[in-house]
Amino acid sequence: MRVIARYGGPEVYWTEYFRVHGDSRPEKWILDSITKNPTGRPVVAQLIGNDIPALVRTAKLLQKYPVAAIDLNLGCPAPIVYRKCAGGGLLREPARIDAILGALREAVTVPFTVKTRIGFDSPAEFDALLPVFARHAIDLLTVHARTVLQMYRPGVRYDLIAQAARELKCPVLANGNVFGAAQAKMLLAETGVRGLMIGRGAIRNPWLFDQIRAELRGETVKLPTGRELLAYIHELWDNEITPGIRESAQVQRMKKFTNFIGEGIGEKFLHDIRRVEATADFWRVCEAFLDHDEPMPLEPLTQKIP
Ligand SMILES: Cc1cc2nc3c(=O)[nH]c(=O)nc-3n(C[C@H](O)[C@H](O)[C@H](O)COP(=O)(O)O)c2cc1C
Image 1 (cartoon, rainbow, N blue to C red):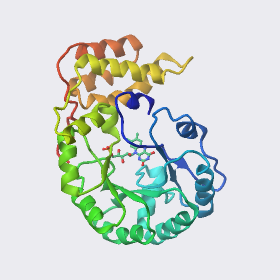
Image 2: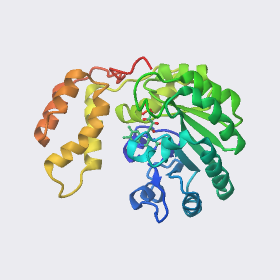
Image 3: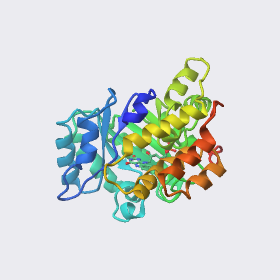
Image 4: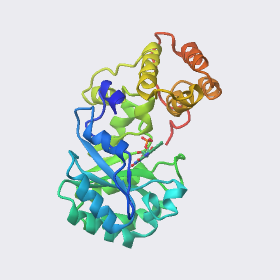
């Protein structure tokens, strides 16, 4: 959040999800993103879980902090989560979602929002989910237009996001593979949503938010140069460094970011950066590809066609 905000950043941030169960307490490192929010913009607290009393207790507790909204995650596709019938796993049980939304709607006095996928194993499930969201007068719905079992594979159903925007009274945000300013403008027009939620694209291209705003104002979109991208990777490194951590562990941590960023650089970069272990090699590869002043569109290699 701190790094992204320096590049303009979004109008509002979501926390990583707080894991909620019988005896959970909000994780300190996630709470920090609310109490030490470095962005100057609102932050929404997201919860994941299925234990109604625990969700209500946690939502009430988190509302004592400066949160813009409480959000429920109905999208996480990690098997360890969905097998416990939390996150995306709940999409198999609309009646259970109904009960959770009813209880949270009553407990939450700040805006109450939901982030969902379009179904568990089939987009056909979306038709049955929309009335459940409508019944509880949620304040905003974010739709990641893939099924849970689809994980992150191609086939994003923006048409179903448009259906949600048409059928629900609340504002809808579109999510999934937003990667460029022109595409973002097209998506907003095609789906009729109120806004976009951006995940991996923000890490790959932190300029994206300003680029989209420029595109929507009809201005020329400014692309970063290779050297500016290199400076961004340095900033991520400085932000992520953990004193005393092993060199290989630090490089490993950075690879989580360069896996996304590299999608916007090229196959050869991804190939080389995935194989480095030492700090010096990490920077040698980054400099070999980025020490130049050419513009970088930073659009993903593999996901241009949703
Ligand atoms: C490493 C990683 C962690 C994520 N954590 C969360 C999370 O805590 N809560 C959430 O709602 N979505 C989470 N997501 C999903 C994204 O918010 C988003 O829905 C998904 O990546 C598709 O959008 P994108 O193509 O813009 O990334 C995560 C995704 C990734 C790759």
